[in-house]
Image 1 (cartoon, rainbow, N blue to C red):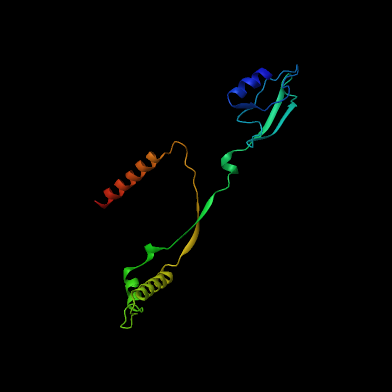
Image 2 (cartoon, rainbow, N blue to C red):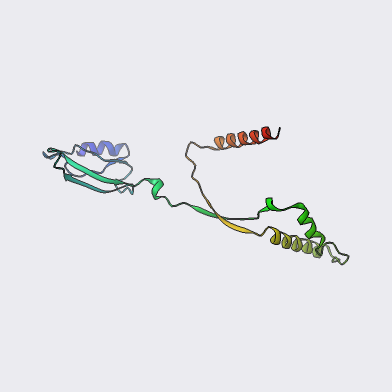
Length: 164
């Protein structure tokens, strides 16, 4: 048994069954994992005698699948719903603002500040900044930058085709 364990260890595997699984004392059943013995993927490993099988013991354990245990990783993003803005509504708001008056500041810095404050206030009213959580998806190792670019180019070509 120790020779088998050493052989698996040389290949980065661990054998978790640490007792006999046969009535004559041999370990016939194996539970192999990648990496070290302290793996969170396998728990509650038990070896016990099953009355239905006269010469073998039953090896029981729980396997914790990654997808079931993974907490979704969320990222907070902020943005504005600019698609909902109508150019006419923005134009009307600008025309009713201080930007369209004879009473503009005389210095360039004051004009820029007024412009910035006014347009920001209009945007805050029509398309307020919203915060939302997005789920971070983990790409599989085979999904490389090249795959991502090919997918993006395909979608771009599809949109261009639909316009025709």
